[in-house]
Length: 166
Image 1 (cartoon, rainbow, N blue to C red):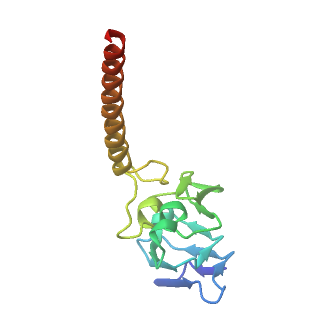
Image 2 (image 1 turned 30 degrees about the horizontal axis):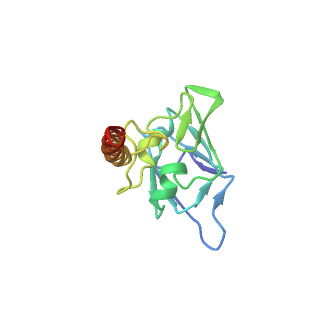
């Protein structure tokens, strides 16, 4: 447990170094009006975290570093879910897992944990939608196939018509 409720500034950095990271850590923070709190997660450094905040997860400045885009789009490099408790619902945790947050304490966590340079689907959330490039390529291939089938049909029809007239 890291109790930062009486701290003016709290900064916690968690890194995945030699299979060690911050796992099963509870972070208690103050109202952001009276103190600043920051959590930096490097690679898979923040796992199975529990947050107790005044308002929601936005009370903590979250920063994600060194997370490859392929992983960031699926899990934000968070393998184990995070539980977020706040003054709005102190008995029920909001849960962050697989780039989705459920509950009233989520705040802007989906935006805060985005990795710069990664191609996220529009509307946030997990990357279940495919990019437009795939749809365009599929449309072009379908169009080419359609033209080939039409030409083959015309060729077959003419050959058959010629064979009947001979």
